[in-house]
Length: 252
View 1 (cartoon, rainbow, N blue to C red):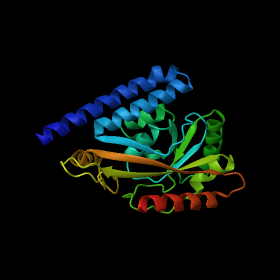
View 2 (cartoon, rainbow, N blue to C red; view 1 turned 90 degrees about the horizontal axis):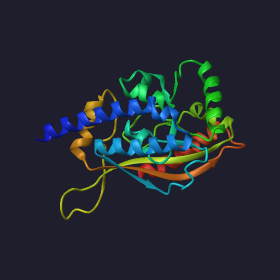
View 3 (cartoon, rainbow, N blue to C red; view 1 turned 180 degrees about the vertical axis):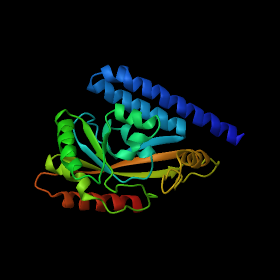
View 4 (cartoon, rainbow, N blue to C red; view 1 turned 90 degrees about the vertical axis):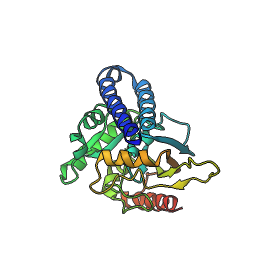
């Protein structure tokens, strides 16, 4: 019965991706900025719900439209959608994600910025793209670790990924992402940290979905920590500050 339930969940998620792909190429493309932001936030929340994940935002400012850059630790594929429930973001992502079936096209349609970090010319292009997005009032998001981890600590932040944001002297919102398991048993009230959502190593998406399914209900907590004004700061200073703040939060 459990396997049948999981198969039905995967089928519904696949259907949701197909619908999202259609929306991103039709009504989303024709919508104005506030409408696109609302579509992204709602669709992301629905997708995570289908996967067995609920989002809990802590201390997030109410100003949903002011252009800022989100800097967060990276645990799972679900991080992107969890952040999108609070701020419709243009993510800076590695070029390999563009080749993902369905999801790659969907991410491209909603404005994900794909980069090849091995090419130096990408830094200049990225600066121009980020500057243009912020000028247009959009939100940019980046995972400076450059890869995922179990989420119990943070890996070293790559300051180079923050160069476009620092160069624009923009505002960085530091966000910590943690995953919890809400007890389903009667009489148990304390939440527990869970690694079920961690998408690391050679894990496949199906394996990740299975782990989340077996651990549900899972809560993705996105916690706003601090806003950093990058004016007068170096990219290394911003990276070190954000890494220290997030590290303290996820180790708690």
